[in-house]
Image (cartoon, rainbow, N blue to C red; front, side, top):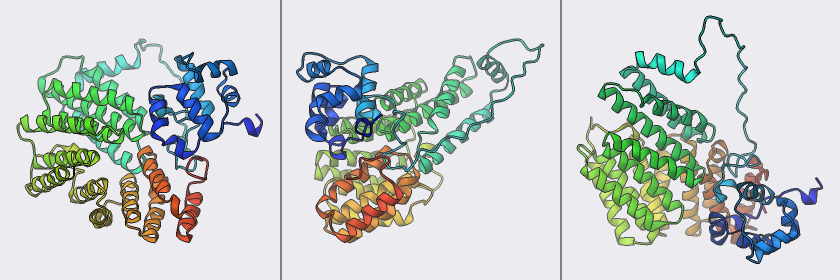
Length: 446
């Protein structure tokens, strides 16, 4: 293919423009094509060639006389115009890197294919039947503990590397556990399996949320709610609703975010034994929702509630395992982010900086995410040198984890830096950006 016809990344400003995001979300290709033409200089004839459409068909779409609904056409448009799959409600495309920042996509090592040896005496049931048969006889509390241990390991690896590579294994285990629920077992084991399945569904939803594939995330979060409802686990239902509230914040739906976290708090208050740590985490999510709405007084009140609940945490509190991440550094950094969302940069900066110093260094995504927040608050105060230094340090963990959310925060900082692009410190940051994250992902580089 000639170089001129080779698909290229669209400009970052177009891919992050609210009009483009909304047009892609509803698959309004008349608007998409017009924006691509006016903002990227890709004219209808070139759109047609890249997307394997006829020029007349593209013209009819732009004129509003034709709609494009077939999935194969939508996929051709995504691939031809290099529109990331999540923007059109598609899975990540083969040409996308795990995030818009990673140098090269790491390939999973290929396992050697085992030799096919089937003893003549072995009947021929499928593998799922064999596993179900074995499990029926041996499923015990120890098995539930093994499942829980694997979930905790998934979360650790998700923090370190992102969830993209983990997702197939998580979904596979989820479907296996859901299959086990079809068997009749004593209540303690059955309830334990429902809890395991609910957490696996939430974890799957989280990996999609972190990849900004919001429709898929919502589907798995909903499945997690349904599974938790089977055992009336209201604390866990509150946790899932809090995840959905955070997603709504990222989708720029602050009213939905507030409604979801309010429902989460209602569930938590109606549960027996809801711990102060859970209530503190939920109050902080409420603060995020209010901050996104610009409700200053309500944000400050929710922050105060989060700290009041946290101070009530006692040694030996029966916290659910899924809330253990919400420790003091997390409370502090989230407090800073809530102030940052309100535009209170001077208050936010020391809080985020303090939390970063105390944060677990194995949590690559968290460190990158919070460092970019710190850089943005510093830039908001006119501290250009500090902001660029902080953002430069954040590039190392950012390059180590596949997270579209982290990529989004880097893009936001990069756009915020636009008025200072010719300053020496900004040029040094961009040089380091190109060094660590070459323009294989294109959209961050001019």
